[in-house]
Length: 301
Ligand code: CP
Ligand code: NVA
Image 1 (tube, rainbow, N blue to C red):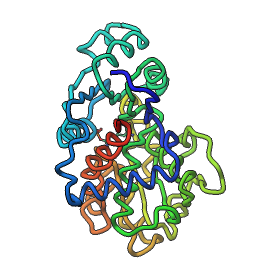
Image 2: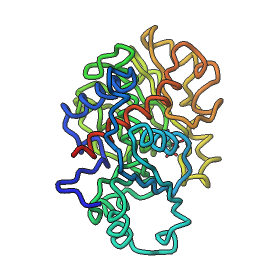
Image 3: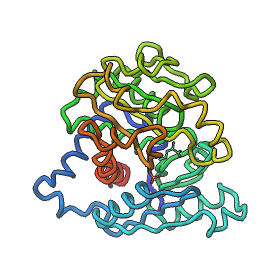
Image 4: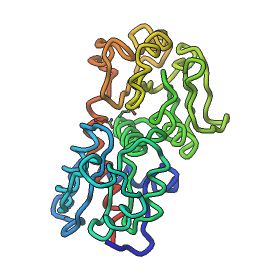
């Protein structure tokens, strides 16, 4: 469906700092069911497509449920089952689908697929993860920290492991909101975004990264699409596990986050995942609430 001045959400930078903080606040309100919120159906009569080229549990289900709760209807489109999987051009697919759909959530490999799609689509495009960024995840993570009382504009955050898509979105968040982020990555696995050293540092030493941290983040050593590197990566990343021992130099009340799915015993131990430090299950739930806030914003009349 055509929308004038449509906005996409491919990158946290698509919103201003004030808008990101407002979305986080709105998601907390939606979660807490402020009076009348349940009665509002801002997506009534709207249809949202979910076009996925990679597997997903959380993103797919939380978007489908979120669209339903807002009064809309979601259609899941497996990449392999539609003509784009047989080579129909992005510009054709985008123009056709946006004549039917009011918004499209896309999970794909190359970030350029998303930017191309957004260029040709008249409906808002939402990044449901690319090889480069995962903005819905990180905005949900920020909401999770805020609801625990962490000041997300002045916290000290650590990232342990691969400088991957989720790490890149954490870097963007640090630069927009102004918090300190130190990433510990093995040589050759630094983040793929340029970063501002005022807010972001990269070290090879996980203990240095977690020193006095309020929150420690990690993610799989092998992301989707890198499966043939998994054996080599296990060796390269073995000193980058989030374990009870690694938590010692951090704040005693440090929170631990993981976007999931986790490889228990690799990037994170069972003990830490199940400890009182872990925000992992709240993070997963909050994908639902933050994405409802994002949909509400992008589809407002
Ligand atoms: N964290 C996350 O995006 O999970 P899924 O791959 O299950 O969607
Ligand atoms: N970095 C991971 C995140 C999964 C949600 C991947 O891209 O596979």
